[in-house]
Image (tube, rainbow, N blue to C red; front, side):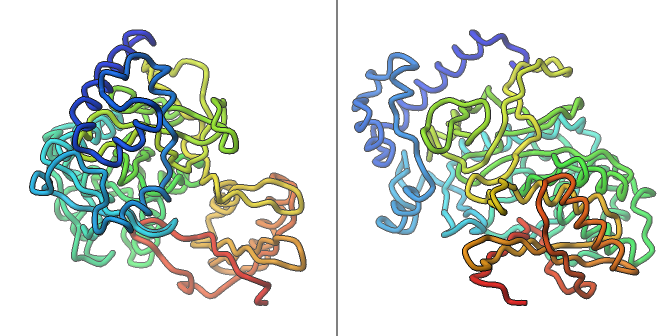
Length: 423
């Protein structure tokens, strides 16, 4: 399936799409209203890809409004409520959290999608996969845990433990892989260093990362791999969409699992197809609460050359480049936070950082808060110079005391907007 030519793959997607619409449309009020706007009141009206493309793009704000009007789960439900067996919600880092329900069938689909992620990273039944995750309402690595189990690997939960206890558990249980955010992988490495634990001597040979785009940033990947003595793989997914993106052994960008998702890339302003723009996704196996033509808010760039791994699935060069609405305009220069992170992470002496954006007069300015080991002055100056050379902008960089910036197990909130300069 992952090596199908374009036409057979499109036929597979069409068959799955038609089956999903026929199963979900009769009872799903949210989907029904959107289909009706496109003149697709009956599943039999969906005859061509042109019909599909008439469907309006769906936004997160519309989902939030639907759940607010019909609490607590909204109207994107294809079955009676007693058919659903799982409830999760988004992290809330970009606004009001969304609650999402899954049936037994949809949850099994989640697990299958994650097996694709894990297999592509070289994991299999002989592995022991550790999940340093709190296992709350945020879907996070719940589905990854299920995917490891479905793969036949030993899935090890790390809930109810602090960072030091998790490191001890990895060692004592012989974990060969770790699934966590890039930020938490670096925090685990920081705590290990403080406690004299040599991570490279553990059995961990693979790390899989989600929740943030960091693992596709070369400098972040390099720091993780150097700290762990393991190979780091990126992954992308969304609570409301599913686990759609995975990285192969070639590590030349994220593949979209087009066996289970339809992917489009559009200009954020016009909605027209583009080589670089916003990723729009439709899931094909989550019948209980499907999403068609969903604006993810993630900025991506299509990679044209074939991947060395032989897969024909769509590939996203550089993974998730950032959030469409996170782009900063600093003195006329467009800058994504991920570009700043890629520079900061090149400096091993910087343990953690925060990007402050504030107004000075009529202009947006950027200040980097840096936790630096040892003598901070030279490192801070070097970071400022690297930003000037690489991005063409001047930013203020300020050293702050060690351990003064927050650490995150889930999605890191490193971009902070201030109303005005607080310095």
